Length: 145
Image 1 (cartoon, rainbow, N blue to C red):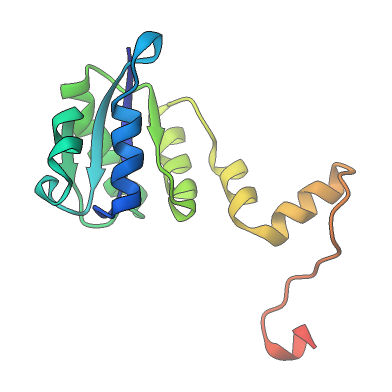
Image 2: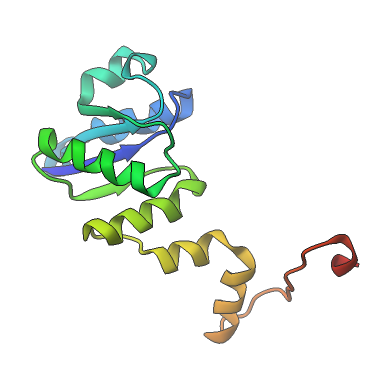
């Protein structure tokens, strides 16, 4: 059984569907899912809550220190943590920082930053010989013109 921490800052309908799908995996891919969020657990639908192995609430899901504390808190009820998961793009870098801090497998901070920063991503592509659209980072309207 995989032990996952799913970071879902808010109990939005789409997010709840993803959490429910991950927590409902069956067959050889069963998962014990701990939910880390800024919302109280009772904001999530009862069907989602019924599938959770744990919940921990933090103030800011984008803060790597708070995320790490939440992951540590959920590790006990889950019996450890195998993966950190989130669907929101803006969570990928903070989660990567936490993975590195806690020694978890998955996307690291450098790769996550390359994914989030599109200008940096294109520079990495160019350096690797991968064709991509021309680009240039600008900081103001004059630079764009």
